[in-house]
Image (cartoon, rainbow, N blue to C red; front, side, top):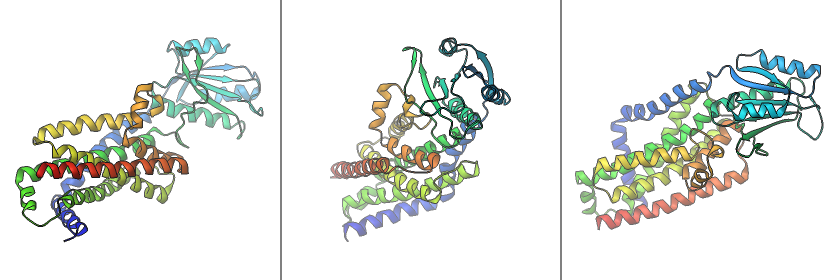
Length: 373
């Protein structure tokens, strides 16, 4: 038989094994994202009475009404000070989480900001709730109002320029987490299933059975990778259904789902190659499970699965560049939170993931063949 036919044969075998335990496999895939989205999504939406200080340099009726609007909701606990320096001192000392500066040109002044917001990014879910709320209240007084948000860095005593962390049109942390969980479930499902499948076949003698048949050795790996690609698609659909039922949204709609499937499949292939490469050199199932947990969680974290990469210290931001999950999750966030996928970012994400998929596939084939020779 040809390499393609042999690969399909292995794929059919893997799928039959999966289908024999279909119910338990679906439940196992669904339970982790369900718990995370319920628990952390709920925490993100339960924010109230966040301490906010306002500096009113405009001193006009619209500015006073703006402050009243902010104070009327239980999301923020608003107080006023007279100078920006005093307000930033309170932010630096941790007495407040946000500083709102209403500039003299409020509500409209062409060419310069009229509302500045300073914050610290220690509590990302809080930032994601408060910033859009402030911007929405300010927009009441002028749809084209010039709004500027900046992360305050106490060490330097100034604000970082051009930092705007509003990641989506609604700034909802649940949707932010939703896109990260999609990446998580792909990595964990493929990382564990592929490697454990190889170890199970080695311990059960199936690999030796393959070797006495005329089947191509490379097809054993390619068939498993092909199955992992299908498994990634199934995992994505499960997480999407759970997310939508819990109230999450995909702003890009059906086109966004297609992009999630493309990026998720490429990520699944990459992680499967890594999993098979490591499993080919291991004999102990427990050791491989420890490896999977040790690798999977850090990869998910530094890829921005829980908090944005922009909030990381420089060393973690540098590490995230080499994390394949970074490129998939970044793409997920565009289609989930923004409703569009910039061409430049799409080219980078797809190219990196495709290249990594090819490289890890080749390495996994070489290591697997060297192990059984």
